[in-house]
Length: 262
Image 1 (tube, one colour):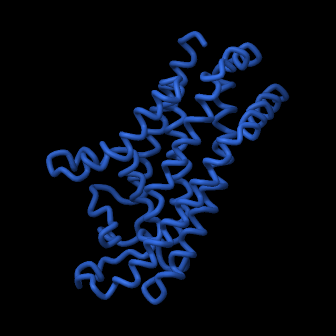
Image 2 (cartoon, one colour):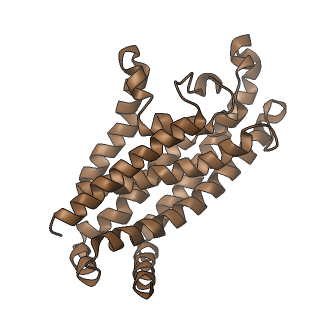
């Protein structure tokens, strides 16, 4: 236990001593809250122009998280930097010499990252929701309405899972450029294209980001123009699919860390 505590302290020192990693968390919160507030403001002003069908399925909770699609960019950067800094600086050799138990090394790094991302993700999710509902005015909702608190807590869990998935992929790639080169196009181009084409739409529903965002919805098929549409699973089913992706990426990362030389 004492050994685990020392490794955790070591990983915490690494994270807080590299400013770029902490800055990415602040940027993730700022971008998510700011962009979501902007979209909520525009949505309120254009609410009367929506069709009757769009107004009937309007999901004010999901709309207040619209900025999270861009804010997750910084969360992905955090996950990449926390892991890849070890490899790009050559520190990984020193780290594994000090902690030869590679499972312990990976567990402690992930534990420190989870703690940070979870706190920032939850704070961002609640702040985004509260500001968004204030801007939506009479079209907004409250935490006391059915399933709303679940969606807000889900927002924090979604941001945490995105960072964990990224860390697992980066342990596999071992290079910041390679990890960014794979993750950024995947989340911001490929996933969107596959989800927008009818032939691949059903497959895209099971990608980690598209499945995970279901936890942010309250109304089925809601969200207006920002909605995720009908899916063959519910909010918790979507989050479960995302958890499976995260576990798969972390397992792949662990196997690469265990089998390959530093």
